Length: 392
Image (tube, rainbow, N blue to C red):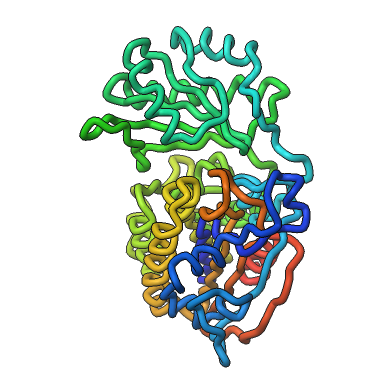
């Protein structure tokens, strides 16, 4: 059985795109390079062996004289710097039109309809903000009014935060689904609605990562659909299921941390996942499959460290990811292909807390691969093409 294993290190960009100023970014942004410099080098021997250090000069990541895999730099074709456009493009779907952003907050008619249909009574904020900052600022008012905190960012997101000790988690999910329906029927072009549950722990409002959910627009067609339609399994680990709005997915499991996502990925590679437990109700293994896809998003680099300007934590997260790469490779069969890449940047060392419009690294490995420098590749859809060539 042929399998492709795709691991996305969320936001690990490697340098500004030439059009970065159109996205309010500076040409100096380079997430991985600056994280390496801040930490006086990173210890990532397994990705280094494949060829990560051969892509460009990263402090502490050496160039390999005889790398074990293929390595290169991918440029994004889509007009965006977010999770959705990045993942969709690597699955073969280009987004030439940028998703809409709302730097002044969402239109009053949208908010009014949201309040009416959810019966939430009102909303707090309705402005761009850092998630951790806005819940700290408005937690007390949220408890007084029971109004949800609605905010956005430089990305195309409608985010809803609430204390789930005050309002049930299921209610938050229902409100997000209502927001998604409102946005889809209107001309709002918003990429994602994000449920941001939190609790007050030791007096501090703390987001609960494992209960976060993303409600994306539905992609038209991707390589995920091709694999599913051919009878293959598409195993989504982390927020992949949300990014693709379940389209093309056969099995899914959410994660509360990168470590959990990595452990689940390793289990999937070793055929130790309880697939029956995480299969979609409509999944039927009736066709003879040409191949499967294991698709993992590792979000901590972005969510916990990039957006919070924490290059130390970011570096530790990359090193943690690397410790699993050797076990994954060791348990791969001769029919397996591993791709490690990223979806955009989020340089924690530059001003601001938003994503950055960056190029991304791509590492490709299999037991029988011919090592080589892939150079600069135009389009994240290179990943979809490699998957198709491998499986079909």
